[in-house]
Length: 238
Image (cartoon, rainbow, N blue to C red; front, top):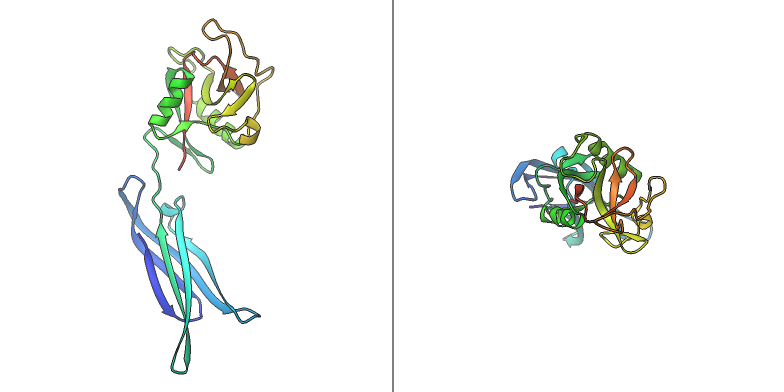
C-alpha cells in the first residue's frame, strides 16, 4: 500500500495517505493516515536539501513500520525554475501474535504456558507458534514476566515446580550459559540469579541443571533440570 504525490514548489507540504491498513495476517484494519511535512531549501553552498518530518499518524499504525521516501528534481520551463518534490509512503505489514499472547506495553508480547513440558519440548512449542522461548534483555522485561507469572495458579498440575518456568537459555557447554540466540546472559542484558545460583542442582532424572528458568517470586534466574516438566514463557517478536 502506498501513496505518491508530485508538487512543483520549494515550500513545505503535508502528505496525507489514507487507505485500509492491512494487518500481518492479511486482514484489513481501520483507516490509516500519515501526515508528513517535507521542506526544500538551499544551503550556504548552493545545494538544495530536502527534509521530511513525521507529523502525525493514527493510533492503529503506531506499532507498525512506515517506509517513507522523498526525491527532488529541479527543472526550468521558460524563465521559471521549479523544484519538484516526490514523496511516497508505504505502511509495512506487521506480524500479529497468536491467541493467548499478552502485550506488556513498551516491552513485548508474552504467553505463559501452564501445560508442563521439558525445556526442549517448550522450545519447539514456542517455535510452532511462530515465537520463541522468552529471552530477557532488561530488568523491565524480567518485571513483565514476573507480573504475568504472579497471576498464575499457585499450583500447576503435573509440573515439577509451581514457582519456576522455563525461558530461553541453557548451558549446553557446562558452566557457560547462553541464550537461544547464542548470546551470553550479560550480552543479552539480564543476568540476575537468585542467591547461590547457578549451582547445577542434582536431580534423579537429570544430573546437571543445564536449562534456564525464571522465578515466580522475584523474576530472577535459576538453573533447572532440562528433562523435568515445567511451565514456560514464549515471546512473540513483531
